[in-house]
Length: 201
Length: 201
Image 1 (cartoon, rainbow over the protein chains, first blue to last red):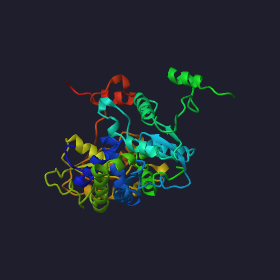
Image 2 (tube, helix red, strand yellow):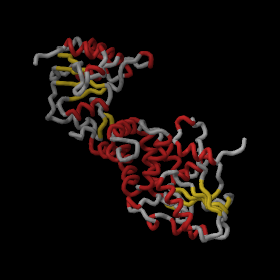
Image 3 (cartoon, one colour):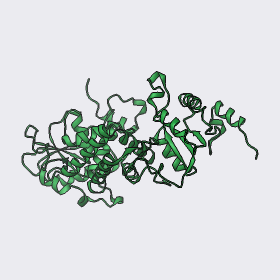
């Protein structure tokens, strides 16, 4: 901006908001103005919520989840099946699986996938800890719930080998037609996988 | 969300972020996760910037601009031409004109446009104060810089009449082809206006 017409405090707010994913410089200005107009209802509560999150949120030392306690609420939840460990790439994937409300197991967040070109090898990921957790006799199955991308599948293969010495079932999410999906819009790889894994009606 | 898997602090952060313009529930989750991961670089500074803005930002009692001082920095800027008053609908329009860096006058923020269907009449807008400011003998021109929409133009006509008794030039922004615009994509109203106001090359 040529002039700091909005005052340095608002300019700084705009600059920080523009660093959020999904907000560019233009929408950051719009968001800042909206915040300033709704000072009591939105700006002050959001400032407090951010301060609270900044002060309290920690990474779970067991599974890599993000929570306000360590170990996290999922790791200490005794109602969850301790025999299943679901490996995900990122906390957002853990949230997505929790929203589906179908699993009642524990997780292990890798913090990324293997990507040699980006310099991400096994040591950059939370893999040693996974092998350590999976070696606990109570764990009977490791579900590898990584994205169905090249890097995700490479990582899945690596994990399978890293866990091969343990008496575990190692599984992965099924490939197939997304619920609500139309065949005409799906790629051939998905259709091939869906056909191969067809089930009896 | 079915379960508060992310803890109540993060859930609350997500809910508040989702109320920003341009962010939905999904992108609010993504933004919250990004914030929590960049706690030191982004979350804590943003919390501080919001707290500062919430504590300090005020509406200028003279022009309706948003700033950390009242009267605002623009109103007290003695380098600005006091004879011109630019009427805008919203602070975002003021910011847009300031970014263009071509004006060096003062502003008057109406806080909206007349819209009888939404119950917005002259008393809901910052119009009485405009008439009062325009009556200052130092003011020689009022530029009505409202959006070229039906409501904006209705409001412009209303303001013209409200200011008619004063010895002022009342002007409006030119209509025409946007710089960089292609004729083929412009509506007929814009083309008609651009032709009527054609200038010598």
